[in-house]
Length: 162
Image (cartoon, rainbow, N blue to C red; front, side, top):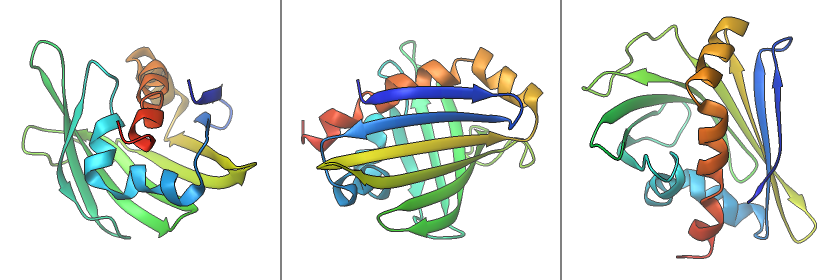
């Protein structure tokens, strides 16, 4: 599994994932920049994602939904805040209604993704910053930590073209 470390900090209100891949940063970047690749891993294996809207640029909107084993749909949104190919991506993430639009635009998690060379491969550090320790704990209780670990565990298959 590519996730080599996770760290939860209520002091800094962050949840950090460090993953390593046997591919250069430019290839790993594409799992974020290509909506068809993104939807192959964004979401745990039993909750696959479908990208409904994809504007991969600062100020751009991403809308997606994940479909559970029983057909239940969970909608989410991103607002892209920074794109520095192939090294850095930042976006705000939140829950969306059935229309794909934010349920509560203030209930966001800010995500920062950093890609850096690590030997012949890439180290991807993803930091989710929460508005409060309470929000962090609520999302961890909802399964965010395990869900992200499982989701990132699918990236190797995407990179291998399977």
